[in-house]
Image 1 (cartoon, helix red, strand yellow):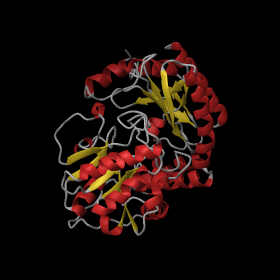
Image 2: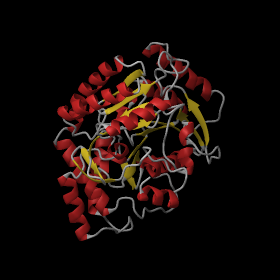
Image 3: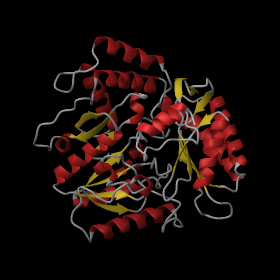
Image 4: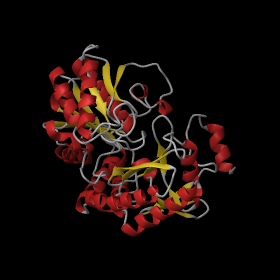
Length: 427
Protein backbone atom coordinates (compact mmCIF):
# COMPACT_ATOMS: atom_id res chain seq x y z
CA UNK A 1 0.00 0.00 0.00
CA UNK A 2 1.44 3.38 -0.98
CA UNK A 3 1.95 6.06 1.65
CA UNK A 4 -0.54 8.30 -0.15
CA UNK A 5 -3.15 5.52 -0.02
CA UNK A 6 -2.53 5.13 3.72
CA UNK A 7 -2.93 8.87 4.23
CA UNK A 8 -6.11 8.81 2.13
CA UNK A 9 -7.62 6.06 4.29
CA UNK A 10 -6.70 7.90 7.48
CA UNK A 11 -8.64 11.05 6.60
CA UNK A 12 -11.40 9.85 4.20
CA UNK A 13 -14.80 8.31 5.01
CA UNK A 14 -14.98 4.53 4.81
CA UNK A 15 -17.80 4.83 2.26
CA UNK A 16 -15.74 6.88 -0.22
CA UNK A 17 -15.40 4.56 -3.23
CA UNK A 18 -12.00 4.29 -4.90
CA UNK A 19 -10.92 2.17 -7.88
CA UNK A 20 -8.28 -0.58 -7.91
CA UNK A 21 -6.62 -2.74 -5.26
CA UNK A 22 -3.65 -0.39 -5.50
CA UNK A 23 -5.31 2.97 -6.18
CA UNK A 24 -3.99 5.18 -8.93
CA UNK A 25 -2.63 8.70 -8.47
CA UNK A 26 -3.16 10.60 -11.73
CA UNK A 27 -0.71 13.47 -12.01
CA UNK A 28 -1.37 14.95 -15.45
CA UNK A 29 -3.05 14.37 -18.79
CA UNK A 30 -3.02 15.37 -22.43
CA UNK A 31 -5.55 14.58 -25.12
CA UNK A 32 -7.03 11.15 -24.40
CA UNK A 33 -4.18 10.06 -22.12
CA UNK A 34 -3.24 10.46 -18.45
CA UNK A 35 -0.09 9.64 -16.49
CA UNK A 36 0.32 8.24 -12.98
CA UNK A 37 2.83 9.15 -10.28
CA UNK A 38 5.23 6.48 -11.58
CA UNK A 39 5.22 8.02 -15.04
CA UNK A 40 3.10 5.32 -16.69
CA UNK A 41 0.76 6.44 -19.45
CA UNK A 42 -2.86 5.25 -19.76
CA UNK A 43 -5.49 5.63 -22.45
CA UNK A 44 -8.43 7.21 -20.66
CA UNK A 45 -11.82 5.68 -21.50
CA UNK A 46 -13.66 7.13 -18.49
CA UNK A 47 -12.71 10.83 -18.40
CA UNK A 48 -13.06 11.33 -14.65
CA UNK A 49 -16.62 9.90 -14.81
CA UNK A 50 -17.61 11.40 -18.20
CA UNK A 51 -16.36 14.82 -17.11
CA UNK A 52 -13.21 15.41 -19.16
CA UNK A 53 -15.50 15.46 -22.16
CA UNK A 54 -13.34 17.06 -24.82
CA UNK A 55 -9.70 16.30 -24.02
CA UNK A 56 -7.22 16.54 -21.19
CA UNK A 57 -5.32 19.85 -21.11
CA UNK A 58 -7.28 21.21 -24.07
CA UNK A 59 -5.36 24.41 -24.92
CA UNK A 60 -8.48 26.44 -25.63
CA UNK A 61 -9.95 25.63 -22.21
CA UNK A 62 -6.75 26.00 -20.19
CA UNK A 63 -6.11 29.37 -21.89
CA UNK A 64 -9.63 30.59 -21.07
CA UNK A 65 -9.27 29.49 -17.43
CA UNK A 66 -5.85 31.09 -17.06
CA UNK A 67 -6.91 34.38 -18.61
CA UNK A 68 -10.09 34.61 -16.54
CA UNK A 69 -8.24 33.69 -13.33
CA UNK A 70 -5.82 36.51 -14.08
CA UNK A 71 -8.73 38.97 -14.18
CA UNK A 72 -11.04 37.81 -11.37
CA UNK A 73 -11.73 34.35 -9.95
CA UNK A 74 -14.91 34.95 -7.97
CA UNK A 75 -17.74 37.41 -7.56
CA UNK A 76 -21.01 35.40 -6.89
CA UNK A 77 -24.38 35.89 -8.57
CA UNK A 78 -24.96 39.10 -6.59
CA UNK A 79 -23.07 40.88 -9.37
CA UNK A 80 -23.38 40.87 -13.14
CA UNK A 81 -21.12 38.27 -14.73
CA UNK A 82 -20.61 38.60 -18.48
CA UNK A 83 -19.23 35.07 -19.12
CA UNK A 84 -22.12 33.56 -17.13
CA UNK A 85 -24.71 35.46 -19.16
CA UNK A 86 -23.02 34.50 -22.42
CA UNK A 87 -22.93 30.81 -21.53
CA UNK A 88 -26.54 30.91 -20.27
CA UNK A 89 -27.66 32.44 -23.57
CA UNK A 90 -25.99 29.69 -25.56
CA UNK A 91 -27.32 26.88 -23.37
CA UNK A 92 -30.86 28.32 -23.37
CA UNK A 93 -30.86 28.31 -27.17
CA UNK A 94 -29.35 24.82 -27.42
CA UNK A 95 -31.73 23.35 -24.84
CA UNK A 96 -34.80 23.40 -27.10
CA UNK A 97 -36.92 24.64 -24.20
CA UNK A 98 -39.04 27.69 -25.13
CA UNK A 99 -38.53 30.88 -23.08
CA UNK A 100 -35.75 29.10 -21.22
CA UNK A 101 -34.07 30.39 -18.08
CA UNK A 102 -30.75 29.00 -16.82
CA UNK A 103 -29.44 28.66 -13.26
CA UNK A 104 -25.85 27.53 -12.71
CA UNK A 105 -24.71 25.19 -9.94
CA UNK A 106 -21.45 23.49 -9.08
CA UNK A 107 -22.44 19.87 -9.81
CA UNK A 108 -25.03 17.54 -11.28
CA UNK A 109 -26.21 16.62 -7.80
CA UNK A 110 -26.92 20.27 -7.03
CA UNK A 111 -28.57 20.73 -10.42
CA UNK A 112 -30.97 17.84 -9.77
CA UNK A 113 -31.60 19.10 -6.24
CA UNK A 114 -32.59 22.48 -7.71
CA UNK A 115 -34.81 20.83 -10.32
CA UNK A 116 -36.64 18.95 -7.55
CA UNK A 117 -37.11 22.19 -5.60
CA UNK A 118 -38.58 23.87 -8.68
CA UNK A 119 -40.88 20.99 -9.59
CA UNK A 120 -42.25 20.41 -6.09
CA UNK A 121 -42.80 24.13 -5.54
CA UNK A 122 -44.44 24.65 -8.91
CA UNK A 123 -46.75 21.67 -8.47
CA UNK A 124 -47.22 21.99 -4.68
CA UNK A 125 -46.50 18.28 -4.34
CA UNK A 126 -43.58 16.38 -2.82
CA UNK A 127 -44.30 13.23 -4.82
CA UNK A 128 -41.78 12.32 -7.53
CA UNK A 129 -41.82 9.67 -10.23
CA UNK A 130 -38.39 8.18 -10.91
CA UNK A 131 -37.05 5.30 -12.95
CA UNK A 132 -35.88 1.99 -11.57
CA UNK A 133 -32.09 1.59 -11.81
CA UNK A 134 -31.65 5.39 -11.82
CA UNK A 135 -29.00 7.59 -10.22
CA UNK A 136 -29.29 11.35 -9.75
CA UNK A 137 -26.61 12.36 -7.24
CA UNK A 138 -25.53 12.11 -3.63
CA UNK A 139 -27.50 14.85 -1.81
CA UNK A 140 -30.31 13.90 0.58
CA UNK A 141 -33.01 14.67 -1.98
CA UNK A 142 -31.12 13.14 -4.93
CA UNK A 143 -30.46 9.92 -3.01
CA UNK A 144 -34.16 9.73 -2.17
CA UNK A 145 -35.07 9.41 -5.88
CA UNK A 146 -32.23 7.05 -6.77
CA UNK A 147 -33.46 3.64 -7.90
CA UNK A 148 -30.11 1.89 -7.46
CA UNK A 149 -29.54 0.31 -4.05
CA UNK A 150 -25.74 0.38 -4.37
CA UNK A 151 -25.85 4.20 -4.33
CA UNK A 152 -28.75 4.72 -1.92
CA UNK A 153 -27.42 4.75 1.67
CA UNK A 154 -30.65 5.71 3.44
CA UNK A 155 -34.40 5.05 3.33
CA UNK A 156 -35.11 8.44 4.88
CA UNK A 157 -36.39 10.97 2.37
CA UNK A 158 -37.83 14.49 2.00
CA UNK A 159 -39.85 13.19 -0.96
CA UNK A 160 -42.35 10.44 -1.67
CA UNK A 161 -40.86 8.55 -4.59
CA UNK A 162 -42.65 6.11 -6.88
CA UNK A 163 -40.61 4.06 -9.33
CA UNK A 164 -41.65 3.46 -12.93
CA UNK A 165 -40.69 0.71 -15.37
CA UNK A 166 -38.76 1.44 -18.55
CA UNK A 167 -35.16 2.49 -17.98
CA UNK A 168 -33.76 -1.02 -18.59
CA UNK A 169 -34.66 -2.60 -21.91
CA UNK A 170 -33.18 -6.09 -21.62
CA UNK A 171 -34.02 -7.08 -18.05
CA UNK A 172 -37.19 -7.09 -15.97
CA UNK A 173 -40.78 -8.19 -16.63
CA UNK A 174 -41.06 -6.56 -20.07
CA UNK A 175 -37.69 -7.57 -21.52
CA UNK A 176 -39.21 -10.24 -23.79
CA UNK A 177 -41.53 -7.78 -25.56
CA UNK A 178 -40.91 -5.97 -28.85
CA UNK A 179 -39.97 -2.30 -28.59
CA UNK A 180 -43.52 -1.18 -29.34
CA UNK A 181 -44.97 -3.65 -26.85
CA UNK A 182 -42.37 -2.63 -24.27
CA UNK A 183 -43.36 1.03 -24.56
CA UNK A 184 -47.07 0.16 -24.38
CA UNK A 185 -46.52 -1.96 -21.26
CA UNK A 186 -44.50 0.78 -19.53
CA UNK A 187 -47.15 3.39 -20.38
CA UNK A 188 -49.87 1.09 -19.02
CA UNK A 189 -47.82 0.65 -15.83
CA UNK A 190 -47.51 4.44 -15.50
CA UNK A 191 -51.25 4.93 -16.07
CA UNK A 192 -52.03 2.29 -13.46
CA UNK A 193 -49.60 3.84 -10.96
CA UNK A 194 -51.18 7.28 -11.35
CA UNK A 195 -54.56 5.74 -10.61
CA UNK A 196 -53.42 4.79 -7.12
CA UNK A 197 -51.72 7.94 -5.90
CA UNK A 198 -52.06 11.68 -5.48
CA UNK A 199 -50.76 13.90 -8.27
CA UNK A 200 -46.95 13.80 -8.51
CA UNK A 201 -44.84 16.88 -9.15
CA UNK A 202 -42.60 15.45 -11.85
CA UNK A 203 -41.01 12.49 -13.55
CA UNK A 204 -37.22 12.63 -13.48
CA UNK A 205 -35.34 10.37 -15.89
CA UNK A 206 -31.91 9.89 -17.41
CA UNK A 207 -32.38 9.26 -21.16
CA UNK A 208 -29.47 6.82 -20.83
CA UNK A 209 -28.86 5.65 -17.28
CA UNK A 210 -25.27 6.32 -16.32
CA UNK A 211 -24.37 4.66 -13.02
CA UNK A 212 -27.03 2.08 -13.87
CA UNK A 213 -24.75 0.70 -16.59
CA UNK A 214 -25.59 2.76 -19.71
CA UNK A 215 -29.03 1.21 -20.09
CA UNK A 216 -31.83 2.92 -22.00
CA UNK A 217 -35.39 2.35 -23.19
CA UNK A 218 -36.47 2.21 -26.82
CA UNK A 219 -36.61 5.60 -28.53
CA UNK A 220 -39.93 7.28 -27.90
CA UNK A 221 -40.67 5.93 -24.42
CA UNK A 222 -40.50 9.31 -22.71
CA UNK A 223 -42.50 10.88 -25.53
CA UNK A 224 -45.20 8.30 -24.82
CA UNK A 225 -44.90 9.04 -21.09
CA UNK A 226 -45.19 12.74 -21.91
CA UNK A 227 -48.69 12.29 -23.30
CA UNK A 228 -49.74 10.78 -19.99
CA UNK A 229 -47.87 13.33 -17.87
CA UNK A 230 -49.38 16.26 -19.74
CA UNK A 231 -52.90 15.05 -19.04
CA UNK A 232 -52.09 15.23 -15.33
CA UNK A 233 -49.98 18.40 -15.44
CA UNK A 234 -46.92 16.46 -14.29
CA UNK A 235 -43.55 17.96 -15.24
CA UNK A 236 -40.80 16.06 -17.07
CA UNK A 237 -37.23 16.53 -15.82
CA UNK A 238 -34.55 15.21 -18.17
CA UNK A 239 -31.33 14.48 -16.28
CA UNK A 240 -28.69 15.18 -18.95
CA UNK A 241 -25.72 15.20 -16.58
CA UNK A 242 -24.13 12.29 -18.46
CA UNK A 243 -26.03 12.28 -21.77
CA UNK A 244 -25.76 15.94 -22.76
CA UNK A 245 -23.49 17.76 -25.22
CA UNK A 246 -23.58 15.17 -28.01
CA UNK A 247 -22.03 12.20 -26.21
CA UNK A 248 -24.61 9.81 -27.67
CA UNK A 249 -23.57 10.86 -31.19
CA UNK A 250 -27.10 10.70 -32.56
CA UNK A 251 -28.41 13.63 -30.52
CA UNK A 252 -27.08 16.69 -28.71
CA UNK A 253 -29.37 15.92 -25.76
CA UNK A 254 -30.59 12.50 -24.72
CA UNK A 255 -34.21 13.73 -24.58
CA UNK A 256 -34.18 14.28 -28.35
CA UNK A 257 -34.55 10.52 -28.88
CA UNK A 258 -37.92 11.01 -27.15
CA UNK A 259 -38.82 14.44 -28.49
CA UNK A 260 -41.96 13.65 -30.47
CA UNK A 261 -44.12 15.51 -27.93
CA UNK A 262 -41.72 18.35 -27.27
CA UNK A 263 -38.79 19.09 -24.97
CA UNK A 264 -38.74 18.48 -21.21
CA UNK A 265 -40.05 21.13 -18.83
CA UNK A 266 -36.75 21.04 -16.93
CA UNK A 267 -33.30 19.92 -18.08
CA UNK A 268 -30.30 19.42 -15.82
CA UNK A 269 -26.68 19.38 -16.96
CA UNK A 270 -23.16 19.18 -15.53
CA UNK A 271 -19.98 17.12 -16.00
CA UNK A 272 -18.75 17.50 -19.57
CA UNK A 273 -19.57 21.15 -20.19
CA UNK A 274 -16.70 22.30 -17.95
CA UNK A 275 -14.25 19.68 -19.27
CA UNK A 276 -13.25 19.02 -15.66
CA UNK A 277 -14.20 22.32 -14.05
CA UNK A 278 -16.96 22.16 -11.42
CA UNK A 279 -20.06 23.32 -13.24
CA UNK A 280 -23.68 22.23 -13.50
CA UNK A 281 -27.03 23.83 -14.03
CA UNK A 282 -30.75 23.78 -14.64
CA UNK A 283 -32.70 24.94 -17.69
CA UNK A 284 -36.44 25.42 -17.33
CA UNK A 285 -39.17 27.36 -19.01
CA UNK A 286 -39.67 30.74 -17.36
CA UNK A 287 -42.89 30.04 -15.43
CA UNK A 288 -41.30 26.98 -13.80
CA UNK A 289 -37.96 28.63 -13.06
CA UNK A 290 -39.65 31.73 -11.63
CA UNK A 291 -42.05 29.88 -9.31
CA UNK A 292 -39.90 30.37 -6.20
CA UNK A 293 -41.22 33.22 -4.03
CA UNK A 294 -38.13 33.76 -1.86
CA UNK A 295 -34.69 35.18 -2.52
CA UNK A 296 -31.89 32.90 -3.67
CA UNK A 297 -28.34 33.22 -4.95
CA UNK A 298 -25.43 30.97 -5.81
CA UNK A 299 -22.08 31.66 -4.22
CA UNK A 300 -20.09 29.41 -6.54
CA UNK A 301 -22.52 28.51 -9.33
CA UNK A 302 -21.66 30.48 -12.45
CA UNK A 303 -18.17 31.29 -11.20
CA UNK A 304 -16.33 33.44 -13.78
CA UNK A 305 -13.57 30.84 -14.11
CA UNK A 306 -15.83 27.81 -14.54
CA UNK A 307 -18.14 29.49 -17.05
CA UNK A 308 -15.14 30.75 -19.00
CA UNK A 309 -14.06 27.11 -19.25
CA UNK A 310 -17.60 26.13 -20.27
CA UNK A 311 -17.76 28.75 -23.00
CA UNK A 312 -14.40 27.74 -24.47
CA UNK A 313 -15.24 24.05 -24.23
CA UNK A 314 -18.68 24.42 -25.82
CA UNK A 315 -17.22 26.47 -28.66
CA UNK A 316 -14.56 23.84 -29.32
CA UNK A 317 -17.15 21.05 -29.19
CA UNK A 318 -19.41 22.72 -31.75
CA UNK A 319 -16.68 24.04 -34.05
CA UNK A 320 -15.01 20.61 -34.28
CA UNK A 321 -18.28 18.63 -34.53
CA UNK A 322 -17.41 16.35 -31.64
CA UNK A 323 -20.97 15.05 -31.65
CA UNK A 324 -20.32 13.78 -35.18
CA UNK A 325 -17.00 12.32 -34.04
CA UNK A 326 -18.77 10.52 -31.18
CA UNK A 327 -21.22 9.08 -33.70
CA UNK A 328 -18.56 7.92 -36.15
CA UNK A 329 -15.80 6.72 -33.82
CA UNK A 330 -18.29 5.49 -31.22
CA UNK A 331 -20.14 3.48 -33.84
CA UNK A 332 -16.93 1.77 -34.90
CA UNK A 333 -15.94 1.14 -31.28
CA UNK A 334 -19.32 -0.41 -30.41
CA UNK A 335 -19.15 -2.78 -33.38
CA UNK A 336 -15.59 -3.74 -32.46
CA UNK A 337 -16.61 -4.40 -28.86
CA UNK A 338 -19.63 -6.43 -29.95
CA UNK A 339 -17.35 -8.66 -32.01
CA UNK A 340 -15.08 -9.08 -28.99
CA UNK A 341 -18.07 -9.75 -26.73
CA UNK A 342 -19.41 -12.44 -29.04
CA UNK A 343 -16.24 -14.44 -28.37
CA UNK A 344 -16.56 -14.23 -24.59
CA UNK A 345 -18.90 -16.35 -22.47
CA UNK A 346 -18.80 -13.62 -19.81
CA UNK A 347 -20.36 -10.92 -22.01
CA UNK A 348 -24.15 -10.78 -21.96
CA UNK A 349 -24.57 -7.57 -23.92
CA UNK A 350 -22.66 -4.66 -25.44
CA UNK A 351 -24.94 -1.62 -25.58
CA UNK A 352 -24.83 2.12 -25.91
CA UNK A 353 -24.69 5.01 -28.33
CA UNK A 354 -21.83 7.16 -29.50
CA UNK A 355 -19.12 7.25 -26.87
CA UNK A 356 -21.35 5.98 -24.05
CA UNK A 357 -20.94 2.20 -24.10
CA UNK A 358 -21.71 -0.52 -21.57
CA UNK A 359 -20.44 -4.12 -21.51
CA UNK A 360 -22.58 -6.26 -19.21
CA UNK A 361 -20.83 -9.29 -17.70
CA UNK A 362 -22.50 -12.47 -16.42
CA UNK A 363 -21.40 -15.79 -15.04
CA UNK A 364 -20.74 -18.09 -18.04
CA UNK A 365 -23.78 -20.04 -19.16
CA UNK A 366 -26.16 -17.99 -17.01
CA UNK A 367 -27.94 -14.64 -16.95
CA UNK A 368 -26.57 -13.89 -13.49
CA UNK A 369 -24.65 -10.66 -12.95
CA UNK A 370 -20.92 -11.10 -12.40
CA UNK A 371 -19.46 -8.21 -10.37
CA UNK A 372 -16.31 -10.21 -9.65
CA UNK A 373 -15.56 -10.43 -13.38
CA UNK A 374 -16.21 -6.70 -13.80
CA UNK A 375 -13.74 -5.91 -11.01
CA UNK A 376 -11.19 -8.28 -12.55
CA UNK A 377 -11.53 -6.76 -16.02
CA UNK A 378 -11.17 -3.27 -14.55
CA UNK A 379 -7.86 -4.32 -12.99
CA UNK A 380 -6.67 -6.17 -16.11
CA UNK A 381 -7.48 -3.20 -18.33
CA UNK A 382 -5.44 -0.94 -16.08
CA UNK A 383 -2.52 -3.35 -16.31
CA UNK A 384 -2.87 -3.13 -20.08
CA UNK A 385 -2.79 0.67 -19.99
CA UNK A 386 -6.52 1.47 -20.19
CA UNK A 387 -8.78 3.19 -17.65
CA UNK A 388 -12.50 2.32 -17.73
CA UNK A 389 -15.40 2.54 -15.28
CA UNK A 390 -18.00 0.15 -13.95
CA UNK A 391 -21.61 0.30 -12.85
CA UNK A 392 -24.87 -1.57 -13.16
CA UNK A 393 -28.15 -2.19 -11.42
CA UNK A 394 -28.62 -4.99 -8.89
CA UNK A 395 -24.90 -5.74 -9.05
CA UNK A 396 -21.99 -3.71 -10.35
CA UNK A 397 -21.32 -5.91 -13.36
CA UNK A 398 -21.20 -3.48 -16.28
CA UNK A 399 -18.01 -2.03 -17.74
CA UNK A 400 -18.56 1.65 -18.57
CA UNK A 401 -16.74 3.02 -21.62
CA UNK A 402 -16.89 6.81 -22.06
CA UNK A 403 -13.76 8.35 -23.62
CA UNK A 404 -13.35 12.05 -24.41
CA UNK A 405 -15.37 12.97 -27.50
CA UNK A 406 -12.21 13.78 -29.48
CA UNK A 407 -11.21 10.09 -29.47
CA UNK A 408 -9.46 9.01 -32.67
CA UNK A 409 -10.01 5.77 -34.58
CA UNK A 410 -6.49 4.43 -33.77
CA UNK A 411 -7.11 5.13 -30.06
CA UNK A 412 -10.47 3.37 -30.25
CA UNK A 413 -8.80 0.34 -31.82
CA UNK A 414 -6.05 0.37 -29.19
CA UNK A 415 -8.57 0.54 -26.35
CA UNK A 416 -10.68 -2.24 -27.86
CA UNK A 417 -7.66 -4.53 -28.12
CA UNK A 418 -6.71 -3.91 -24.48
CA UNK A 419 -10.30 -4.67 -23.46
CA UNK A 420 -10.27 -7.85 -25.54
CA UNK A 421 -7.16 -9.04 -23.74
CA UNK A 422 -8.62 -8.08 -20.35
CA UNK A 423 -11.79 -10.07 -21.07
CA UNK A 424 -9.74 -13.06 -22.23
CA UNK A 425 -7.81 -12.96 -18.95
CA UNK A 426 -10.98 -13.57 -16.90
CA UNK A 427 -12.37 -16.31 -19.15
